[in-house]
Image (cartoon, rainbow, N blue to C red; front, top):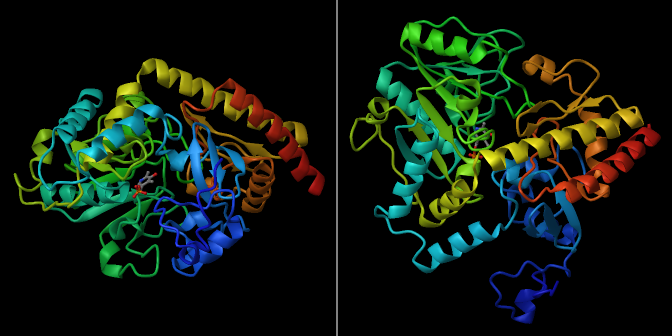
Length: 446
Ligand SMILES: *Cc1c(COP(=O)(O)O)cnc(C)c1O
């Protein structure tokens, strides 16, 4: 690797390289200190700061396939994959070429483009419930737009969400849940006024709530992947469909993680339940900032300019992001998904073997291509009350032991592990050896 320059001293050295990342010269600590002086907590998404596992983060200089390389030149097998946004592996040539080609034609116009139309067609062709698709810039925007649309379409205010599901940084969906009971209107974070969640009801996952005619929408992760990985119980999603239909509420699937990750048609295809609206993000942007809402034409036509529900975005349908998204969707088919599922199963098995051999009580619940981590001896979690019994201190130890072995997992006990096209069997063999050493080290340390 050729170091470009030292960004910590580049002003003094008169360095003009805009792309400089100081690879091979700066240390993670120096870089992160400098970030902390100008970015709150040194990060732009709070989990990246390592607060829940302790220690200081590695600072990424570049990535390729299954690997990320930090500014010190250290390489890690990456199981984060941008929290699932990357599915073909980092810097996949098809994505890189599509983005570079798009960039030479301009990065944003503020006018319709062929690519956004093609990406919408690609989504509609793969996900039958999405007759119409509107793009935006993040999963957070997708869920907040879906909620506004559902409220506007139904003329109702109440939104039902599930304890332990995550829908991004949207005020109305950042509501606190109680233990095993339905809770109404408690802000989930400081800064969310009580009024913003006054019409948000939080209920336990995997139980079908009884709704009334005040409910605009039920918003659900069809596979929960932000409290570890929790499968929907048989009948849960079907029950939500029936209950929503009974009272005229919209069923909104938050497929920001599961969309184009579990398979071509996402969780709704896998479980055979069609929502009214679907929120997408992550994979659909190929690692660039994208979100989307898809749904029945009749519901989607309530969005402006056809209908009264406002939506807008300066960069929505962005040429680079839609180019990346198209490149990714074009390479994903049933053959690729069954290979990804085989790799996910292998990852879950090898991690379970490593932990069992070392005598660690850890399990790796899996739904299709999604792998979770649960630190405890009980059965796999079914809701947030059971998911939160995970031993977070144990996760932190395993996380750091894996990192020391050069395997990067997400720095939080409730995140999923991701494999992509970069994680071939040679890489997974490597993960197996390193996980065995990491688990043994955790066991030895007590
Ligand atoms: C990541 C995620 C979001 C938020 O998406 P952003 O692009 O981070 O705003 C919403 N819902 C689910 C299920 C997610 O996993």
